[in-house]
Length: 411
Image (tube, rainbow, N blue to C red; front, side):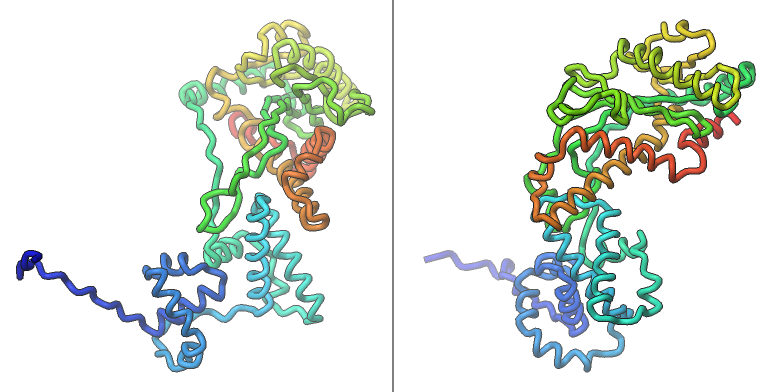
């Protein structure tokens, strides 16, 4: 016979939580927007079974809802066409996620505009003021993201430490060098290397809060290195130097490498070694600058700003007396390097946008899975996208990207 329960330890009865009509109304609206039962429960602090029970009585609730008190939350009536577009867009995002296709902000914005244009054409409706003003702006996207419980996953990188003291004193030193050498913005150059995983997903991808990551998808690890640069004026962007692990990949079998829109080099680790850099400096940079100065009736001289990377040999400063090479103080690249202050990031954004637009287009038009797209996406296509993205970066700006970075500390 079980022991008698102490009167002071009586089992407390669970208090039943009363669900108001206002809360039930919110449940129906969230479900209509595409929220799952679990996410609705988390949003309103209700159990999943409670939400399911309320949704079973949807028809009865819809009949009773008009009588809900006027104190209920008022939701702004939105254009029906935009509302329908968002539902279709949400479904499309879910479909792309299941297909393991990463989506950037730009791709989602373009898809939203495409859907709403298609809906208008099908219905033959005149543009309302709201539709005419709709541009799939970042503000709209942030609201859409909240309405449909999307969140932004960012692939984290490592932040390097920097020497702030040296970084603060260097602009004054550089200014003196520029003034003493009488270099114009046309004669000041900056170059920098960057690694590019040319088969990889964007650093941000938007997915449902119910998913922690793109299931089973890993960024490809095939890496190349680029050397990018220009003059401060922005009217001479240097031909990119590309270093790949293979000297003669199959995709370039029928191509003369000298005709490519990049300077093609190779070594097993795809690095810009000191030997490759010196070769680039002697055979490409000097002749290109010399020709540029001649074409622009300028005295042949130039100032080249470099970071203190192992691949930048100090001896290049003695190769041509008309080319002055200035090295940034050690461990200040993240603070001072003009190409590193958003320029390379912008270039990569252009490259990723172009490449993934091609991937999404192949998926939509041909039903091609992402893994199949990557199998067909070769280094030649990559080279073309690099060249186009580099051109596009400069065409969108009045001056070269490094100009304001150097101006801020010098001019």
